[in-house]
Length: 296
Ligand code: SIN
Image (cartoon, rainbow, N blue to C red; front, side, top):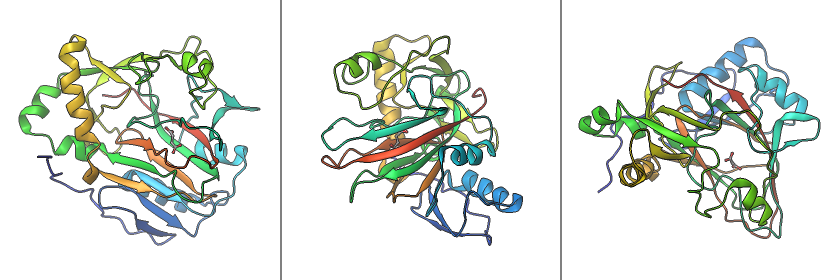
């Protein structure tokens, strides 16, 4: 039987500069009543606090150009161009996630945390919705604080000394193909680029400590292909268990998009997964990454 999370996120702050409504018990909230292009410092500070508290924030009814999305992103930290996905013209920091009517593959359809394979993975991902299907195309999120907190003391102790090997272009992808092979075979919706000198395989602690909240999280997702110092055969059963454990439904929320929604999530304490249930419709979002620290 699945473990039930032993603790819930601490909802301690009240916000009076905007309307905020949780979207699930585990994580996630939506915000109404602000314009990200016109935010005073106090309102920005409250958004930042709410983001740390809820881990995923969907800000409704926004209208941003790529420059304005970057300007809002820079208030949280330095922008981090994607290692593999080709950017949109004129904006090296923004990628477009687009699935057309005739396409069936989608991007990001497994539980993962962004740029897990970099030495300093992205702390935040910020998506802005340009086109959405009439139904479907939701994004799911899993609270990895709860993933950690609901493990037994024995498992926590064993994992405490372990690192995951995270590979940005693993042949363990369900297709068995690299990113470029998937693009060439026409089964990837994302245009890929050569990562050049970027490090795209990194070892990080399986239990990481969030540098701002001090809470521990289970830092395992689909990029984690092995446990450092273990064989594939040894790693696989434990990683399969941990990945399934992290993504249990009672650790999750499901975000329903609207055109004009900006969603920002904290990759240090949640996983995400894009649902692929809208064949025959277009879906298009712009994605921005904010650089984080080396996990510890
Ligand atoms: C991703 O960033 O992995 C995709 C998220 C989405 O398109 O909802």
